[in-house]
Image 1 (cartoon, rainbow over the protein chains, first blue to last red):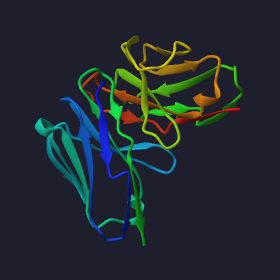
Image 2: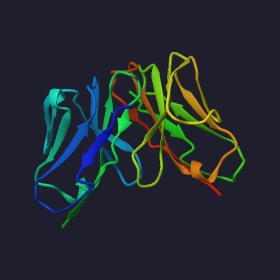
Image 3: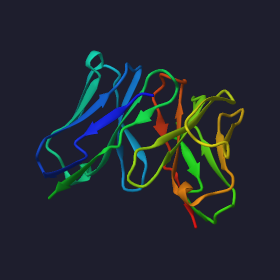
Length: 108
Length: 113
């Protein structure tokens, strides 16, 4: 099956700093999503981005499907950005495969 | 528009028991997928239901079974519970199988003692 690798596994930042999270995948995909998992476990949708670039406030994402990677950018980080960020991909099999996540800690 | 809802939110069972978890899909969605998330790991795909039929299954034994109802809500049943079944169980709904954007509920946290 498809392999998904996220990096870095852990990231610690000071409030106000910028960060880039990466998701590499081993095969072509029709669906790629970025999620933020809150402390209660719910996966919050950030981006549905099988290709191209999207922006939502301080967050933006870029997927280069031909090179099999996606990037999530967080600018001017806030303590509320802390948590685990997951990338999930689906090669059109109706089964999304998640990476192991990046744990982000933003310190005040 | 109502989001994905799951019940119960927390439950404790003992080894060998059976459990049923429930999920109501987001309005307008016809596909439900179930995931298991062990502590410190990413969610793992269990199975997907599309229009009341199983449409793909991950690497889980047959004691994990499911149903989807005509209103597209779904149940996950786990028989003969094992300690390793302790996890967060997440339900996601989407408009379509395969290429649909997933929307997740808050999850059901199962502890097996």
